[in-house]
Image (cartoon, rainbow over all chains, first blue to last red):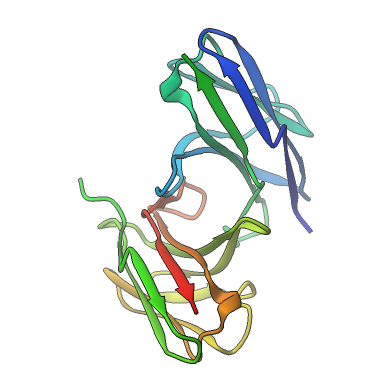
Length: 112
Length: 113
């Protein structure tokens, strides 16, 4: 069974204080690892897809990296508008099955 | 471009009533997914469709839940009869291909009294 564990559950940062969120996963063959951002009362918003170990993707203050067992979402000099829940999900390489298995997320709060 | 559209945004009903949630995927997307989100269990896949055909319904909790996709631009998730433990936020998502990112609607917050 595919499993995704995110840590920490909650993270409080001061504006400008860089940090990283962790996503550990167990899957029998990874097709892709997805990062989403979710604001209160909204649906998850797609950020990145990573496909193979060593891959990195960047968007503004966010950078996602991938190893064979985990992914990190690095946040550089965060701003209050980066406050949200960040979700990680894996998709296993099983033929035509495209199910996503999500972690429970990290609630990030950035204080001004 | 219009994103995934879900209705209603909020639904409050009494136990035993039938509940129907609706979803319009992004035009041209061949895959449609239904998820449920709770504090305890997080975001869980219920069922997904490819070209209007159900592919994996292993996440549907029990026979009280059913989903249909009569055409490429509309899907429903029905709960009959509803129970208080069905209270959750239900999301619909669509993607252009199986391995492509799934794009989510803003969900239906369902409360069963």
